[in-house]
Length: 401
View 1: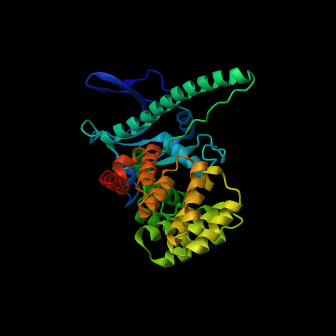
View 2 (view 1 turned 180 degrees about the vertical axis):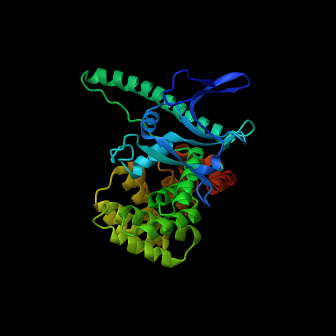
View 3 (view 1 turned 90 degrees about the horizontal axis):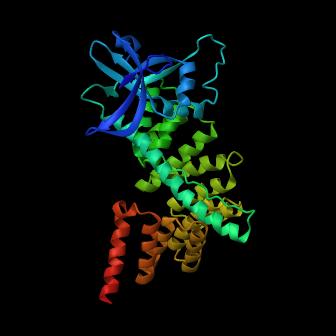
C-alpha cells in the first residue's frame, strides 16, 4: 500500500501480490480511523452507518479502479469495509437522483451501511480479495470479448468490403451476468440495508431478484413478500412476486394456491406490462397446474403479441413442453423447431426435444439433440446430471443395437 502526498479523497493505493508477483488487481482505499467505532453502530443492527461526502461519492463513481471504504478501529486494529461502486450503482437504480444535491446543502453527504461481518485485518482479507478478483475477472472477460469481436469485425469487414465497400456490420458484444461472488457481495450489502431500515422496499426487491437468479427460491419468496407488504401497487413488485410464487410452486410441487394467486397477479398487470410477457407467465402458471390446454392458449396469445426473438424462442419452447404433456407429437416438435430457429443457443429446447425422442425410442436423434444442448451450454457437463444420464443411456442403447 502507498499513501498519497496530496489529499484528493483516497488515502491508499493498494496492489495485490501473489508469491512476490503483482497480479495487476489494484484498488484504492479510503480510510476512516476512529477510537470509538461503536459511535457509528446502529442499535441492535449488525451494521455501522457512515456519512460520506457527496463530492467524493461522485468522484469514486467515475473511477475504473475499485474504491474500498474502510472504517478502521484504532483500538482493536481491525477494519470494516464496503466496495463503493456497486453500492452507488444500485442506489442509482432505485433513485436516479441519488447523486444530486436536491436539498442545496453546502456540504451534502450520503449514508452508507458497513456490515460488521466484512472484517479486514492482517489475517483476514479473503472476502475482500474475492471481490477484487471477481471485479478484475470481468475486466479480463471483457478483453477476451473485445479480442474476439475485433477478429470477427475484421473478418466481417473484409467480407463486406468485397461485396460493398460502404457497408460494415459490427457484431454486438454479449454482456456477461454478474458473478456469484458479486451477487453474494450484493446480498451482504442489501441485507445490511434492510437490517438498518426494514422499510427499504427497494433493498427487499433487489434481494428477491438476486435470490431468484441464484435459484434460492425460499429466500427469494421471503424477500419479495417483505417488499409486497410495503408496496402492493408497484408493477415491478407485483410481477416479481407473481414470478416467484409460480416458480416456487412449480419447483416444490405446490401448493396450487400459489399458482392461482400468481395467475391473478399476472392478470392485474395487463396494461402495465407487455402482453407477450403477461400471457407467457400466465401460460407457464397453467402448465404448472397441469392445465396444458389453457397454457397453450396463452402461449399462442403471447406469440400473437409479436415478442422479440429471444422471448418468442422461450415461448415456443414452453409451448412444446405442454404439447409433450398432451401427447401431441406434431405440435410439440414444431414448437421446438421454431424455438431453435429463433435461438439456436436455447439449450433447454434441445434438452426437452431430446427427452421426447427418448420416449419415442429415437435414440440417435436424442444423442444428436443432447450433444447440441451441451454445445450450447458447456456448463451442463458439470451440473446437468439428468441430461448426462439420458445421453449415456441413449449411447448405451445404440451400442447394444
